[in-house]
Image (tube, rainbow, N blue to C red; front, side, top):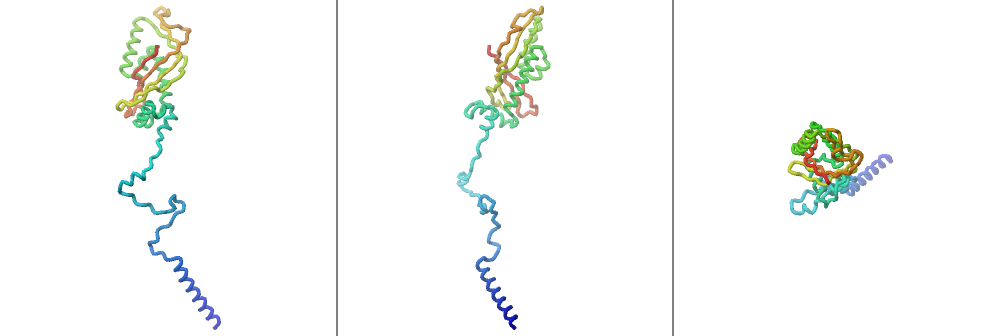
Length: 231
């Protein structure tokens, strides 16, 4: 009898505790909201619906413009400089464009063109020059050949190569490079006598070469479209 009374008393106590806990903790009725992830930045708060009025503009956060940083890495001028603006326009048209990579290629092109012009290698020149520039080079080579003259143009080294102008011309990217080089230039007549230059004197030569490329073309090569030198 005592055991049965004990069971009844425990059952009453358990029922009482159950109803007290229910009143304190509440019940899940499907409207209490989802699980709140403590690792979310907003501590799990529900994402507000997007406003439909002009208040949208107040919530827009502009990401920092990395163009200036990229230009600094590429050796371009500060953001206020027209050169940087031109390089930026080229990069927009051709995201693969890299100023330093371009300069590396321009230095190689400079060496090849100087050597090809001196030796009269029209094949190499035609593949690297625009039609107009090739025509000018070809005319000089032809005049030289008719006079029986030969040119010995030794490129001692390129002291510097810097982009000084850059911009888009329609769909064409146009970049001008200033080359400062050391050369030995000699022109000899048919007898081998020196008619111009000095075979033992190294001179400093400053050239401005302009390269262009169609940014919509699959051909990655640039063409030399203009040249001028400082006398």
